[in-house]
Amino acid sequence: MKREKGLLIVLSGPSGVGKGTVCAALRRHDTQIEYSVSATTRKPRTGEQEGVNYFFKTTEEFENMIANNELLEWAKYVDNYYGSPRKFVEDTIQAGRDVILEIEVQGALQVKETFPEGVFIFLMPPSLKELRSRIESRGTESKDLIDSRMTVAREEIELMDKYDYVVENDEVELAVERIKSIVTAENCKKERLINIYKQLVKE
Amino acid sequence: MKREKGLLIVLSGPSGVGKGTVCAALRRHDTQIEYSVSATTRKPRTGEQEGVNYFFKTTEEFENMIANNELLEWAKYVDNYYGSPRKFVEDTIQAGRDVILEIEVQGALQVKETFPEGVFIFLMPPSLKELRSRIESRGTESKDLIDSRMTVAREEIELMDKYDYVVENDEVELAVERIKSIVTAENCKKERLINIYKQLVKE
Image (cartoon, rainbow over all chains, first blue to last red; front, side, top):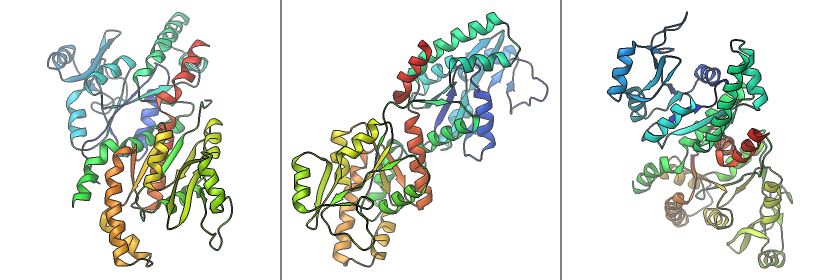
């Protein structure tokens, strides 16, 4: 069946839940999904590649992108900008291919304003205790910072209501299978197919 | 995560599309889905087992079931009654398990009146030509009967709008995978999970 438009899939959830790990695992699977690469002003870390991990920009370049409405969503964290370039996403779905964005909760809500027809997936820890232990296990953050992250996480979980799906990240491979199922199911939704089939009956 | 209620999944579509074959293949897969067995007044065919293929009833028994509102949907085809017993379906979803009904399009619309929250899947032939050739390949029906089945099929495809999903039955195993994905995705829907998670945050 010919596709009318691709899906915009937004994968989000509280910091520490494992969005990056799940998205990387999904990329290793043989799916037809394209990945939106973020732009950032932060410096590349060892091994990070331009156009694969990020598009690396100067502050001036990034601020121009904001001014020219070239970003679907953007935010500033610890003096660095992060954002999702609009053109790649729009071109991909227009070409009938699905595209996934892995972003923070606030960014996801920004995207929802422009793309209410997107598929919004909230990645959820099995429990708040487990989330805390995942953040602690990074070993990079003080107790105060961890406490404040947990407060933010609780607030973000309250925003789950704005999403379409909730996927538990109990095990990465299980979460990946659930996301793949959601994409398959969304592509079977009547709303997305009915015009194609009405044409079929006419012929 | 503890389930609140199971899903009622209704698999339907035009006669000849392969509902029975797809449903039988789904039953052979290791899914957690329960199958609703229909009641009928038609005589058992060789190999058919009570409670596996059908619940075999006398006309009087069946008419009592209708009178007592014990059927979710029922219809009469060629002098025989067919219907879906209500109790098994209701008990199964109350116990938090998913249940699938494989029924005709008219029956599916009856079920939708009592269970609007059900998941309604329309099984679709790859083309009307293919549907015709599937009906012809049974070799049991005259040209006139096949023509009239095709007219009904066109009318039924117009009713696709009442369904949630459309699954193409190009290959049985592909159709089964799509249905499994739909069930997984439906179980990840925010509406079905949000109360459980709100509880989690409170704790």
